[in-house]
Length: 209
Image (tube, rainbow, N blue to C red; front, side, top):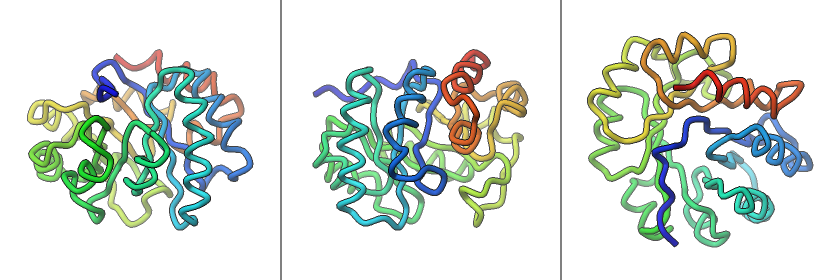
């Protein structure tokens, strides 16, 4: 399996079990894919590994049909076992090299970053992409101060990797995020709480460069 090419990816959706009941994962995943999300991540903090693996297998059946990469948050072993296309790690998780060793060189390894220095360091670690944020306050990351929009253009100048801006991004502020220099975004609660998830995704994607 060749490592997925992320250069054309713009909109990254996360199926976060803090917002979605496990019984609704299949439906939400289908809606995200129908709306044109380019990457889907399963984020299941504090859930049993067996449950995460079961959900990952279910989601991968759906994402594989649409040729959309599935990323597993925090669990390289589950990503490897389920055939998911990659893993995403945070600043306090295993290093990118360790994650890649666990999943294989043909898979994607992404990393969360919260400053320009961390973004540059993640590129040096060999990450395939980074998340950069949180740009705005978000209940998804309550322990992190929002970093605002001032560094968005600079991080794109310094880091050649695909950069997915994240944190409190919604349709209402997406134009500001793009104007600040963002090319790719992650949207979590805005998508998952939308009345029409697929239409929300379509509108968001249409606003991205």
